Length: 476
Ligand code: 6PG
Image 1 (cartoon, rainbow, N blue to C red):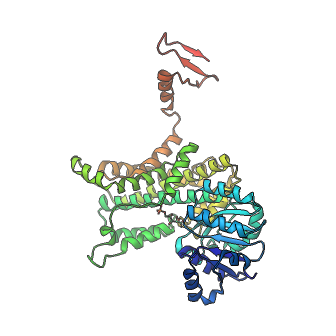
Image 2 (image 1 turned 60 degrees about the vertical axis):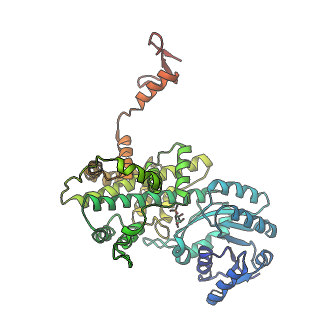
Image 3 (image 1 turned 90 degrees about the vertical axis):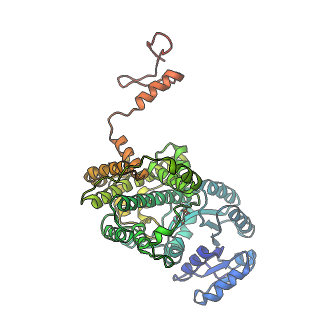
C-alpha cells in the first residue's frame, strides 16, 4: 500500500481533483474508474502526478494505506450507491469513504447511517468551483464524523482554495452526516439568486438604461472593484463582452433565453419550504428559470399581452441606483440562505458555525466574493445574530441604498421589465421592517372560516370569535 488517498470516478471533476491532490506535497494518489480506459488515459497524460492506478476495486483498496480514504467523484444518484457498495466490500472498519458529488443531503444521511453500521466512515462533502476549482483549489464542505475529519481534514486542506484575506484553506468540518451536502445545496441556491440578481441588473441597464452589452460589461467590471467584487460579477462582464463569431452580434443576443438547471436550486427551495424559511430571493431565481423554460407558454401568451408600458425616463444616477439595488438584494438573498443553514442545523442537530461557512466561501467556490468576509465578520461580532441584516454593517449598507433600491424596483414595474428577485427581496426587507403585518387579518380570516383561533396583542391565550353566531369572542 503506497497511496494515502484515492479517487474513484475519473470524469473531468474526478480527474482534476486527483491531479490537484497529486500536486500537493505528501500525497500519493490511487485512482480507479469503472472503465479502465479512462484510468489509463489519465495516468498516461499526467505522468508527473505519479498516480497509482488500479483496474479492480480490490487492487484499488490494496493500494491505499490505512485508514483507507477514497473520494467518490461520480454523477450523483444511483451511481454513487453502486460505488459505495463496491467500496464497502473491500474497505474495513475505520476506513473513510467520501462522496464529493452534488448528492441530496437526505441521501447522504441515509448512506452515512448504512456505512457507519459497517464501522466505516462516510463523509458527504460538497465541492464547489467547477472543473477549474477541482484542479486548482475548490471550496470544500465536508460532513461526517469529527473522527473522520482528523484524517481527511489535512488532505482536504492541502487542495482547497485559500482565502485572499488571510490565506486560510477554504474547508472546514461543517457538521455530522449530511451537513456538508446541506450547506453545498444552500450554496447553490444562493448561486441561483446571485445569478438572477445580476441578470435583472443587466436587463434593467439594457432595456431601461439603454446600454449595450459591451457598455454593461464595462459597468460590471467597474462594480467588480467595489463591494460587489465577486467571481460571478467578473465572469458576467466576460460573457457580455463576448462577440459571436458567426453573426458578429453580442453572444448574449444569440444564446437561447432558456435557463437550464440540474436541481440543486429546486432542492434548496423545497427544503426551505419544509422548514418554513422564507428564501424568496432564491425561490424567485428558481421560478425565473422555470418561466424562461416554458417556451410554448411564453410564445402563446406574449402576443395576447398588448398593454406594454414605455420605459420610463431615468436620470444619470440610474446605473448607481442599480448597483445599490443589486447589493441590497444580494444582502437579503444571503441573509435568507444563512437562515436556511441555521434552520437545517437545528432540524438535523448539526453544530454549524455560520461564520466558518462564510469564511470557506471566500475563495474557490462559485459564489466567492469579497462580501463573504463581511458576513464572516458579522457572525464574529455576534454569533447569535438573528439575521444578517440585523448586523450593524449590513443594516447600514442597506439603509444607505434604501431609496435607490426602491427607485429601481419602481422603475422596473413601471417599465414592464421583470425584476422578481429585486422585488421579492425588497418586500422581505419591508416585512422585517414593519411594525404590523397583515398576518393579523389572515388570522381573522382563518378564524372566520375554520375556527382556527388567534392570539391577542394585549393578553396571552387562545381566542375565537363566534363568527356565525353572536360574534362575541370566547377564550379557549
Ligand atoms: C459549483 C456549482 C456546481 C454546478 C451547479 C450548476 O458549486 O461548483 O454550483 O455544483 O455548476 O450545480 O447548477 P445548475 O446546472 O443547476 O445551474
